[in-house]
Length: 257
Ligand SMILES: Nc1ncnc2c1ncn2[C@@H]1O[C@H](COP(=O)(O)OP(=O)(O)OP(=O)(O)O)[C@@H](O)[C@H]1O
Ligand SMILES: [Mg+2]
Image 1: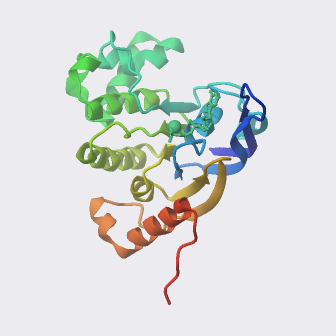
Image 2 (image 1 turned 60 degrees about the vertical axis):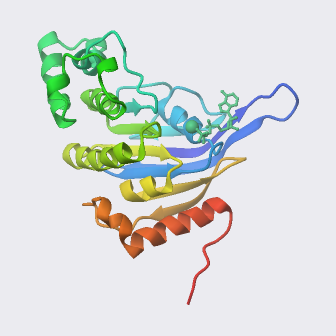
Image 3 (image 1 turned 120 degrees about the horizontal axis):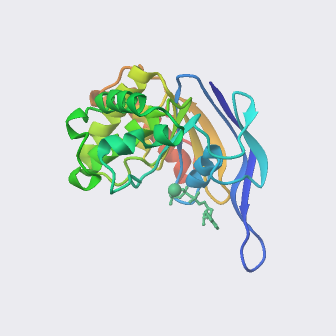
């Protein structure tokens, strides 16, 4: 898997005069099995970027390519998870997970098998017959992740998936997502405004600026890929976090000799 955004620009017209430049000359890539985050303040074009990669919206110029093929619309090669669960409330957990497979015409028995497997991956086998309203926020997000994984996408695209969760649930979900990533070896591209979340999860981070949305810096996270929350206390973790916070505040990190 090789995903790349090449010289992506996205303008939104305004009623009076000059358009909003939501994204300006964005270049980025994600390789097979990588976990990459983009962090940026509100308005830096994070959701716009993810929608372009997902094919839900068209760039003003530039292009997104997956394995060399230009993205012209949504596709099963890219699984999406949004902040707001987006489960079908009238379907059971199992039906939600199997839905994409059903749309693709998979036979009922195989749908069940695949959905059951991914429910097991996210630890919700016991809730297969529940309705979304019977689940907590974190559980709903795990269903959304299982649903996205069930179609076996080349890459999982996530837009602030844990943004609506409380701090404790969020930590559990971050740890959980790392485990799912390790187990499935799916590439993940996640958007977040939470710097600590990005450093905890990613192997590589793109730091975005706002107005216009550009890539300010690409940062390699120098931490082991096996991580648990204790790592947040390590000096190297803190250094990465501060470096990114400083970039977002609009100034370079002060290097103390
Ligand atoms: N459909 C649209 N029509 C007009 N302007 C838009 C549209 N979508 C986004 N924008 C503008 O593009 C810019 C980037 O918006 P976007 O939602 O991508 O930011 P974001 O980084 O996801 O912000 P947040 O952290 O608040 O979710 C903003 O200035 C926004 O007003
Ligand atoms: Mg957004």
